[in-house]
Image 1 (cartoon, one colour):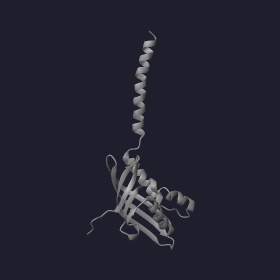
Image 2 (cartoon, one colour):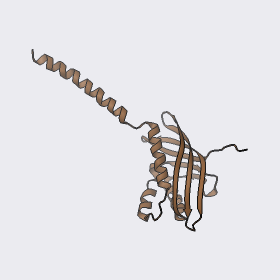
Image 3 (cartoon, rainbow, N blue to C red):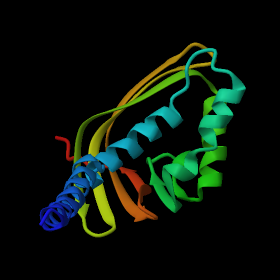
Image 4 (tube, rainbow, N blue to C red):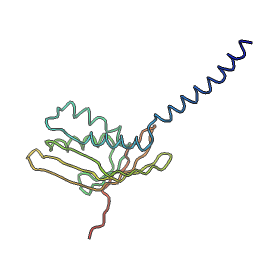
Length: 170
């Protein structure tokens, strides 16, 4: 008589624990939108340069381009220097050259709007902020409306194109 209630107790407890674990995993996992926001934060950190930043820190940052950009990424910022299709290694080189002419650089994003197209495509529209000081002391303060597309590769959202968004002006 004592065995039957214990058996029922375990038969009920195991599915409850399994459902609880599955629910916890679902609630704690990052949504696609959160993962895309993380990719964009990584991009801002990667492109930003602090004053007196050590070369070792810069190299560590620049070697993480493959965690932000897809194997082929189309860039169109309407400047010859930044237009084309690049691999992460080429983007590392481009970023290193750009950082060489800057004393400091702060990249930011605001007004972010993300659209996810399941299963593996997404796009984002946002305002990009660039505040930099050149090595000669001149300042650059730019604000641009940007459009970005993403592709999901091995459960990571990577940027596969980035361009200045066309805005009609009077």
